[in-house]
Length: 384
Length: 135
Image 1 (tube, chains in turn cyan, green):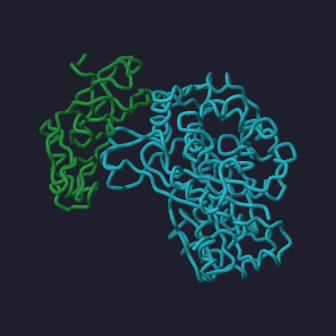
Image 2 (cartoon, each protein chain N blue to C red):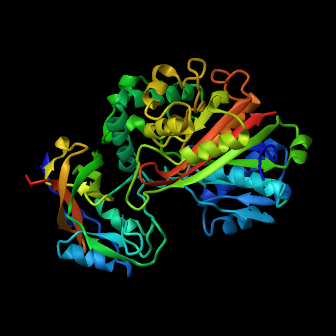
């Protein structure tokens, strides 16, 4: 079974807050849910499918009660920041199988208000005992991949910096972005080293907020007044250490991207803009290579000279400013990638970053740690 | 910037029924790796199943304790910077570790290293690595 053409994204909403000291996390879930349903022209009583990953209490059980939903289909697939991109695919599958017709996906969190400055991988998995004595934290786990990529392919800090530069150009047009100042390559490489070779400006922001999506059946999509954003293809993968034989310069995007392109029946050259999860600059570079936008090892060259800047380069990316500059709610920003792709496909992105004739867009998430283990989810959407 | 890691700052691993032999060996100064009695392939981290072939007939074997640095990163946002690394062991599998007893700015991918044990907060010894031959 394919999901190509079986579901549409009818509602998308990004919470404008970036510091939510005055709101509970559950409240943020409610506000983004209401926002996405209003955007679609639907209401809470229309929802018959609910999707979330990490959420207060017992996840979907607690959230469904808080929101007053009575869904007949549930999914709480938890693959970090890539969860919400996978949820769109799972929602499309459920709709195609008749399990639900209006699927609501929510993400919310407030790491900024709660002071989670450096995120530890504080999970209790079987691998944990063999890693926590060495004090892995999120930045140095991503840095392991960056260091190896530089060693294998000659990638430079200046090349990685271009990714931040592009994001900052886009964020300068986003009034909600945490960091709205345009930066230069020099600004990035001269910012303090956090974990060699990654600098402060190679890292995403820490922000509160959230987002929500509403995925619906074709019949419902056509009954609504919104532009039709069709799900064309999706893929997902889990990448791990393979029993102690890591390849830290590639990601799950190798598989999730190939599956998504095959299902959509398109190629990377057809994609008008890409929203790529950007926990760090290196995450984007490796994803671009693995998704097939350039050859392995040539990501540094591909991102240089403004190639990711809308109106300048060949592949506009993260036109909202991304996690690097705009918003990284709940320390897992995957849902914002789909939201900005929907804006682009509807022609509702900021005019300064709107890609002309944007009829095909990609969203991709890397959830976890690019070096050691992560979930990977790719989604291709089309403006019908 | 020569430094060792303050032992009081090494978080202790949990010891589970399927990893107790590994940690007991570490306390004796011996590095072991997982080994499958069915397919013969090594694995790391040790566990009750072979991740290569799915056999539950697994055990541990002693590693030489030598390898090369596959990648590393010096974490600087702390009062005592430290080097997180992945070391490829000579047996063909690798492990996460810290590189210690060296100038952090001299660490290089491909560098030959050898195991050295350090007590964690609970006293449980954990394997770390230093440049081969010591410094």
